[in-house]
Length: 187
Image 1: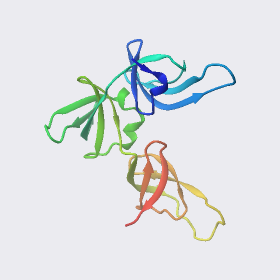
Image 2: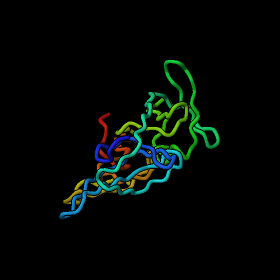
Image 3: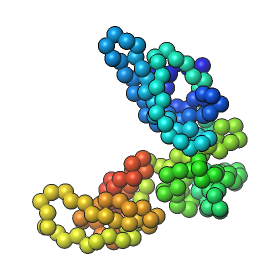
């Protein structure tokens, strides 16, 4: 058992036979009362993201998730297939465990597979990834005095806001946590 005050982003715990991954942690102390711990958690078996509140001093059962470095191969039906580059073992993962990370999957990219025993519960994609701009309006130099963004469609079909100077076929770096533009990648 572990105190909820020891949980941090990325930690996993079990409660009511469900496994949760901590997405955000906030310690709140109001006046004279007990502190409360507010967590945003993802149910790794069901995929739902919820807010949980605990009284300081509460305990939960900590779970050790194995993070295995794997490579994305392909999708077939509702399963995504990943391969261990050392043992060549393949792991099917149901789409409900992939969720929004599916937008960032490209063949042969390395990801971390979250395993609980032999059960695959999800993946972690790299924090920053590069994509080519497939479609965007041309930007005209000098038509603004401030930072103005325009819509762009990336090679993976995602729609993001990019600065005016980004043109079609440019490569851009995207933050996979927020889905936002970071920078243009030099050619």
